[in-house]
Image (cartoon, rainbow, N blue to C red; front, side, top):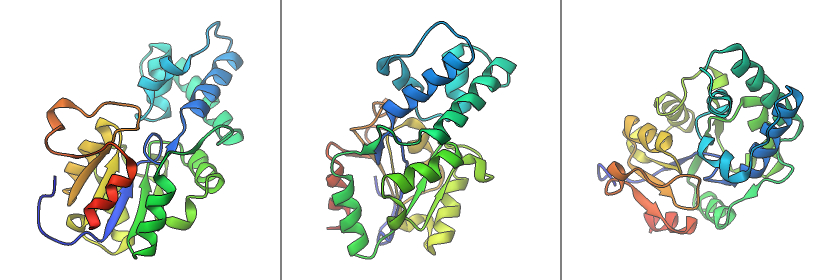
Amino acid sequence: MSNNKKPIKAFIFDLDGTLIDALPDIRANANRALKKLGYDFQMTTKETQPHVGGGAQKLASNVLGKPMNHPDTMAMYHAFTDFYEQHPADEGKMLPGVKETLDTLQSKGYKMCIVTAKPAKARVKVTAALGLDGYMTLALSPEDGFPKKPAPDMLLECCRAMGVDHSETVMVGDTRFDVEAGFAAQCHTVAFAEHGYQDVPAEYADKVVSLPHFTDLLKLIG
């Protein structure tokens, strides 16, 4: 919930599961990587979903059941990111209510950024393909030189770029990583998109603003 009475001036969004449905592309590119590397199994959408949100290397580690820096994990990670650069948004699309919400926020003069665990090269292509670039002051991935969420660094860099204080900013996401990053950055409000890939962490259920519909975000600005 809100932690002070400063007016809201800006919004920071997670990407996958918050603004866009990237799960079909994540699954497809993971399966392309598995096939290229000679593995004899493929991931279903249901099997892929729990691995979204922690970044491509974490996904590779989880899918293979091997440590993050294991050579097989790194080979999977590189193959996945290479395929994602080639197929950034074959099936991806904005989630319901997102365009309407972004249009309204932009028309009212609110500044917006994206912070994501998606590899930077793929992020650039995805945001361009799905028409998100025109709304955003900045979009960041860990490959841009920042620690992954839940570290607050990407959020704070976005605040700097937008010229606002963290206490004037709303963080919007759909995973524990997003929620914890928002609180670590001491954002004005942390909002949780219920249309995403994870349930709100139980210990944060009474501390976040839940969004059953993405357009509910507009209630924060009156």
